[in-house]
Image (cartoon, rainbow, N blue to C red):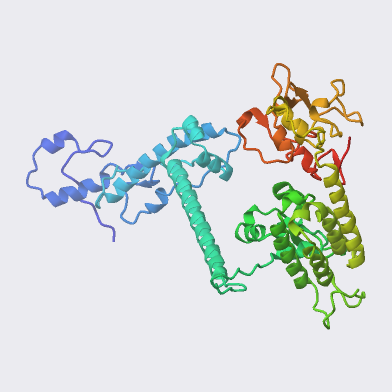
Length: 519
């Protein structure tokens, strides 16, 4: 059944808005509730909130989370990196203000004002590639030239740098741990390795046992025999105590194909000889050191050779089936030890001893007593003949009752005339002061090393503008010199300038051949 509305006592306008006249005119006896029910259907419309997309007010169950999440970056590689950085600074500032407005609305208690809107929609920032980020992380200068940066980019760069620093620290720590483990492993390998090899009990008055170095044995086995003076106790001890001073090299064993076989460590003889010298002259060893080195070399050969099946008489000639290098070298050494006047004759027969020694070690030549004796006999007979020839000749005067005191001169000239068995300039059989003044060369055309200046020997050739150096004549006579001349005279050979007296007939002299002076 239709309900009939009661007409209002207020007068209204055409728009439905109460007329002021009707409001001010009279009917004060009406009820307030009755008036509100009459006004609400005709109130103003609620405002529309464009950012929230709804009619206000914002309800309590509104989805605020959807409006505070920044959308993913847009990829526009056509824009330069600096342009994207600047635009992202503005975009991030705009988004932060929008999010702040949305959070303020979310924090406003319900009911909210009808016209209270959330922040505007968030803008999409520009995207950076991984290579661009790595470039910014690695170059502070690039960051300073492209800045300022948005806070998010600053945090990203700082986090990447911290992560890189942390990774580097972890890598260094891992490397330290690895080195520590390697050191510990090496230490464990070293523990217990310092055991004494061939321990020797010290006995008062007894010489210590000499241990032949392994590198010496390898050299002999591979036919690279070290010089004899390398086998003295002093050199062997130096090899044991100071291996860093020894020059070695790795070569393939003797007799093994170059393409196969493991290399062995041998003495580098060319470098060691330049360091310690060679044994081609007797001057490398004294007679005592010769015996010492020969004994040690014999010990090395005994270690390398197998023991013979039965005792062999060293005086008998061995067959190829009953001998070895140690036996032959022992017979060789025994012969030279029994030579009469061993120490005095040592300089004479040493060259033959070295030749015979190398024949045994490298030429497989066996010892032959008769051949040794014949060769040494010739050497010693030659020595005796030279000594007789070189004896000074004194003419016996007819009248010995009277002595010419005035002829007894004490000058250096008299000493040379009566003492020198040969001319110290050319080596011929005349007195020094009888040397012809026009002769300045040896018979082979080579110039003399010294000349006579007054009563002094001086070097024949001297530098321009410098005075000629004096040469000591007494020392060249193979006599002892008290060195009273000091640095004014040189102790050098007057024949060749070597470090030996001229008349000592040293094998190392350029003018000596088989003990004879080459005139």
